[in-house]
Every structure is written in structure tokens, then in C-alpha cells.
Image (cartoon, rainbow, N blue to C red; front, side, top):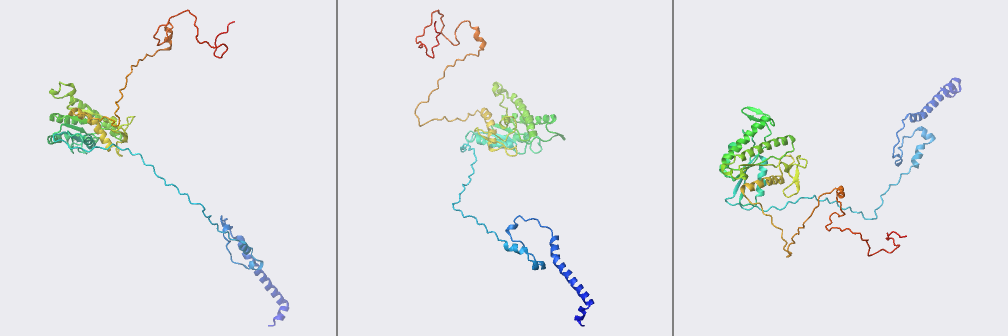
Length: 421
């Protein structure tokens, strides 16, 4: 085909024009697609530290080849910021002083002397009861460690009481214990396990009721009858308060029962002891320890004053058991009646002597003090004379003119004389 003639003809020229127009449209479409795509891209959120990093390079398009790329210019203008170096320390680092924890104040109890050997004929103190009585026995052992004529025997049963006689019955077990030990005195402390229903002849009674208290008192009386037949005096130690308010309320009722029963047993002394009224309590005596384990408001407290006058922990974390100081304090309450009944002398307190000085001690001089009763201000007008209160010498009235031996010079500031005309 002769292409030169074809393109010179009208048909060839028309077809050539159509081909050129189509090519131009295609070129325009190719050039506008990246721009349109860039317009449709969502604007990204600004980055807080974008200036520290170079912008991300994208693929070059035909438009960038023909007209240039401003982004490439931005990449060329970008200068990476210099890395900041930490300044060198010119001075030596300051060493912090180590924090030393302050030592806690520790109450140092006085050293306990070593226990001495007991005499073969030493009197026996038999301690019976529940687990609180076991702590009392430990305190009494420490208290009488320096007394060779007294020995403490611990025969307590921690889970015992007067309610569960099916587990352990003190009224039946006590005669055998007394025959074995032959004590001079009996110390009883019980009741911490007795706040539970009481069963009598297949009838269960709720604690803290009137019927329950009546049955409980009958069992206490039964126990004291056994001790009265044996002739061994009893020192009954009352129960302390506990952290549980309900248990403490029950202990108050039990202490009332113990005290009443001990007083009734003391009034029924043997005929040979009735001559001396002071010996009526030899068969049974009640010791109240309640006030030693409460605060100033009468409530339960875990801390208190021990036998050395220091504030220490007396009760355990459970609010029931005793600490070593609490056991020693229980023994402190039992020590005095035991010494009285056993006719033991109190421990002697060594007198403080100063061997460095030979000077005799000064005897304090007691002066006679005279006191005057209170007097009202209106009582001053009841006296008709001019005698001052407390004046012992009588005042004589005279009409003589008073003359001052030391007269003030006239015209001085302290010259109060009235100027004469």
C-alpha cells in the first residue's frame, strides 16, 4: 500500500487526526492520574517528631520527570540534626549517705535470777484448770523460783471445763490428784472453755440463760465440796476479759458465780478455825484479776502495765492467750493470797547503800505546819477593832501626831506633804 498517497488523501488525513487525538488524550490521562491520586489520598495525622527524620521517598512519576519534583528538593535541603552528647561531669559525684534505720525501742526486762534447788520438804502449790491456768502455772513457777520452801505443780488440762464433764470431770479426777501430790494449797482457774451449751440429763441448755447459770453453779459447788472434804484450801483465780465482747460478758457471769461459791465455802470453815474471824477464808478465797487486763475505760486491751511498771503486750494476737508478761501478771495477783495462806514472808527488798560515801544520811526535819481555815471577804467587816489578820500583838491607840524620822526633802518627786499656806 502506498502510505504516502493514503495520508495525503482526505481519508488518510482524517484517520491520522483521530490517531493523534487519541494519543494526546492518553498522554493527558497518564499525566493527571498521579495528581488525582494524590488529591484522593487522606491527609495523615501530624507526627510529633517528624522533623528529626527525612521524609519518606516515593516512586517518581512521568509528571515528576517532565516538570521536576519538589520533594526531591526537600530531601536535598534536609540536614540531619546533630546528636546531642551529654556533657562530661567535671566534679566528682556526690555520694548519698546511706539511710540507717533507727533502731526500735526495746524494753529490756531485768535479768531473771537462776532458779535454786527446792528443799525436799518444800510445800507444794497445785495448779489445776484450763489452758489459761497453764499460763498461770508458768508465771507462778517464775515467781517462786527463788523460794526454796515452795514448789509449783502444774496439773492443768487445756481443754477442760465444768460444761463438758463427759470429756474431763474435775470433781471425779481431783481426789486422785490430791492423794498423789499432797499439796499444801490448791490454785484453780477455769472457765475459758465453758461458753457452750450444757447438757444435764439429756437436756441441753443454752449458755448465758438463767437455767444454764443455775446448773453451772451446782457443778462449781460440787467441786468445792470435794476440796472441803480433802481439807486443802483453794485460791480461785477469776477469769480476765477477752477480745470477744460476748465471751467477756460470759466471763463476768462466771466470775460472779465463782466469787459467790468461794465466799459460801469460806463461811463453812472447820470448827477449830472459827475462833479467829480472819481465818474464815482459809478453805476458799476468790481473786479478781479483771482490772489488771482492761484499759482506763474498762474495755479489753492487749497491752498494759506489767509487774515492773512498764507498758508491754499482755495478750496474744487472738485476744485470748497470755504472753509471758501476761502470765507473770496473773501470778502477781495469786502471789499475795498464797503467801498469806502459807504464812510465807514477802521477798525482801535490798536497801540501796552507797559505799563510796562515808557521810551519814541526813534525817529530814519535820516542821509544824499551821493552817488557817478558809474565810470569806465579808468576814473582814465583822471585826470591830483595827487588828490585822494574823497580828499577835495588841495595837494601842494614841492621839500623838506621827512624826517621820526621815523626812523627804521639800520639792522632791516623792514629797507628798500638803503645802501649807
